[in-house]
Length: 492
Image 1: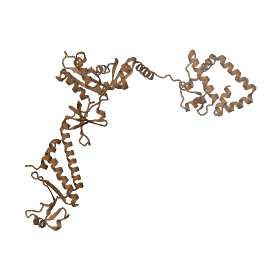
Image 2: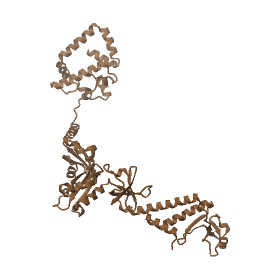
Image 3: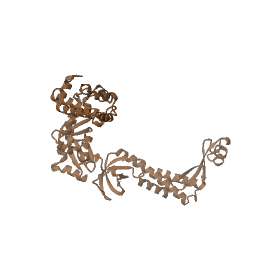
Image 4: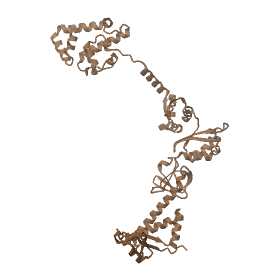
């Protein structure tokens, strides 16, 4: 007949679902620690629980060696001669067990230490049992009862163990009351965990799949197959279904008469929106369906190997296709398993125009073709990286003055020459030949009145105030090269 202590251990083991021997080992380890603390000994101690009497005995264990020279540690080894004084049947290599008195060793501190060791061993054994029980059930739907709420986490009773549902595994639409029964998905099992090792979820797509299998007989018997599910818990779920029977409408079967089947699932999910989509092998057709309720103009496969699609929608449908905070296109991409780029018709048109413009040859005219630009100016512009008339026309006076050797007067001369050049092009009189004298004459005649006025004014100033004008010009042309000033004076 088992002792009362052993019966208590047996009851504890059944309650925790662990092997009784694990608890017995925990008790023996606790006695060993208490004995070592009491005797302050470094000996190899062991303890044994008698199942019948409930008595716990402790003893020191020493290995038997043949001669005193072989004794390296008296706490761990004993000679054959000394060992046979206690037990005549011992041989070399055997173990001598020396009893230790246990009466009175379990003082308050030692008892507390023993209690901690027992609880720790039991908790470890319990975790191992729970892990082995549920590790093969990940993804399974189980009925759970709300046991308590710890901060953001909800603790459930799932039968043989407690489970934990963290905030990220909850739907924002749901709240729970103590004692409430709900269906949850076993998301994962953690072996090294302070709290419950089983983590459950109400946000996993498997929950939606289970609810459809429960509510839709065609899914349960395999006539309708769920091919993909994309879910953002508490917001929206997209589910792709297909029928193996051509006479059965997959979407209609899931929706049910007057929407009764899908409404039942929506109530279970506390009002989460559900889009039921017909699955297609063709990604283009599937993408058009997945982006509902938006209407798609066209879908283009950009890169089949990279699974990349481009979707073009009407300008009025762009916000609907993208959805609130990008939710609609994000769920559609997750459902398809493809990357999706959404563009409006206007955005696509501008993109095509830019591509066409980039492909079209760019008109470029060398600076040498512009009459009125001397060789010195052309050399300075070319040294600064300006090699075409088009690039020169895009520059501001400040940018031109920043070029070494070019001052305000030279800027005016450049501007005058460029304007005359483009004016001659517009009038159709320009001749695109390098160094053409006729081009210069035609450009001058096209603005004869302006040129005459400018020349008369400059000549008057030059003749009447020649010394002052020269002084002013010298100051303005402080940046210009000497050769540049001489060339300009000659021209004037």
